[in-house]
Image 1 (cartoon, one colour):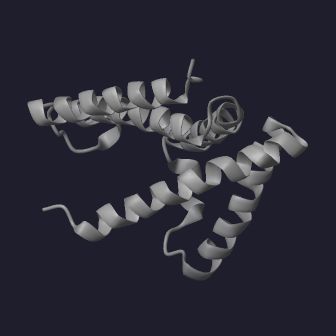
Image 2 (cartoon, rainbow, N blue to C red; image 1 turned 180 degrees about the vertical axis):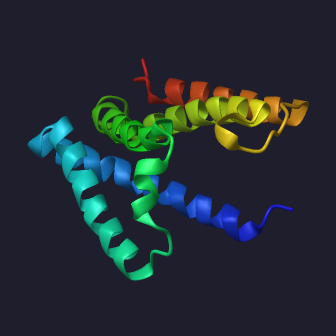
Length: 150
């Protein structure tokens, strides 16, 4: 059973991502896209350092023993933030975010279907396919709604 609290937590994370995009975009206009990505991750790193110091329950000493592919998340996150910073001023926050979400849904459904990266296998089914299809349609509507009226 899916716990509603985790759904709400993810929903709140989406809200924060939607707010982060224009903030980082404005920073990128002032100091440069790559520089804004660096600053964003630097501040995030400081914040996580404090959280880890006070609330962490893991063991960072095990870091050298993890499979190297598990370290790719930082690289992927940096690319993600940088792409958002570059896209928002060109196509707007809404089109950037829906594009991100549709991309995430397509790849995450494939990951679920095959149980990649150690995740649970959740097979593709008609409901998931319809949901993704509706999201692609939403992307097309938002894209068309972004175009200037003639």
